[in-house]
Image (cartoon, rainbow, N blue to C red; front, side):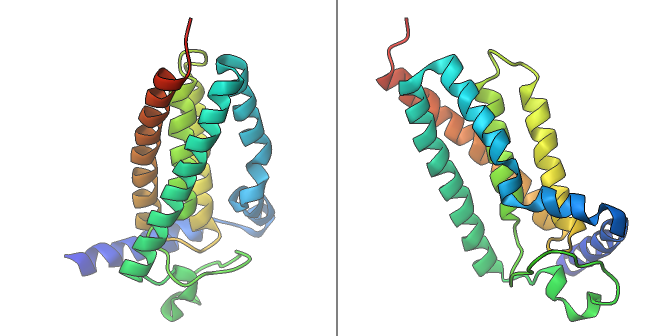
Length: 190
């Protein structure tokens, strides 16, 4: 059963990866680059500051740093534990896929990009929901686009992405609850 699941995952990867074309490669490489979205993160931090104040922002920054560290490190534990090679490193796929990423990496289960962006999306969306009720949909859409970019550039299978997104969503909710608790405990609301 697992073998069939992995075979289907590989075939879906090959199909989705081959939807790409050279004119779009630059865009997807920019989307998959972690530095591309620094302005988005700056805007989100500004919105948190504007709506909650400086003391709350400091709590948010600490919680966000812990959340990103948590998702990143758990991702690494899973990668080392499962040791599922990335598709860009699979010799039997070399002639069937488009590999355009800058680097490949050794193991890919599950995607750190998917888990980190989904955690950030859920955290920001839930935290700012009282002020911007549709922000969570925009943020989740952004996360899904970033996650798909990992298939497009050839470094993750769809199951890597799906598991990363799921773990990221759970982490986002968990750290949102932690932030809420800390705000209630340390920031006086009037």
